[in-house]
Length: 145
Image 1 (cartoon, rainbow, N blue to C red):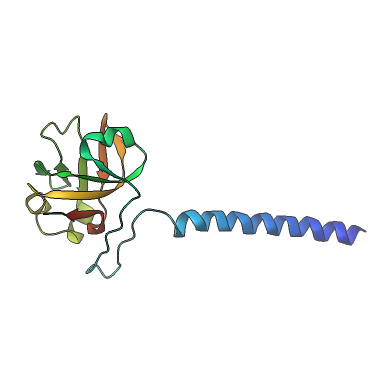
Image 2: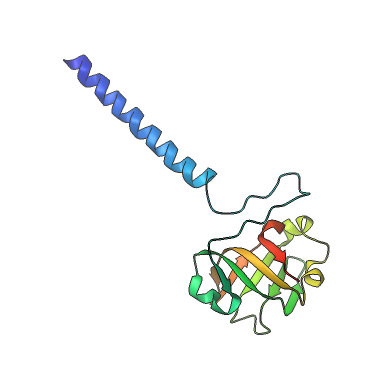
């Protein structure tokens, strides 16, 4: 009787451990964040379920979306490149490329993307009261025109 109880007790711990590993694997392996090609040469653009206007970005904080609009203002501080969809960057959506990822993008991204209609994909976050999307890979931005 004690052997059966001990067996089921151990089996229960193993079963719970397997479930925990599967849950973590689901959110790690099958997340909706686009994965970049490790070769650094070719990237596939993966669309989110919903395409929204940059004007509506503040309504989608925390959501993974595709945002469409024209980059009208840019600035490269050397530490980050800011791609703005509106001249008033303090209130409206900005796509941000950090220095650590500059080598993945076209040279001088502030010039390359300026005045171009684009789709940007990612999770919209709030930074100092305005929406932003961090671009870690060129697969997150596509020039439309």
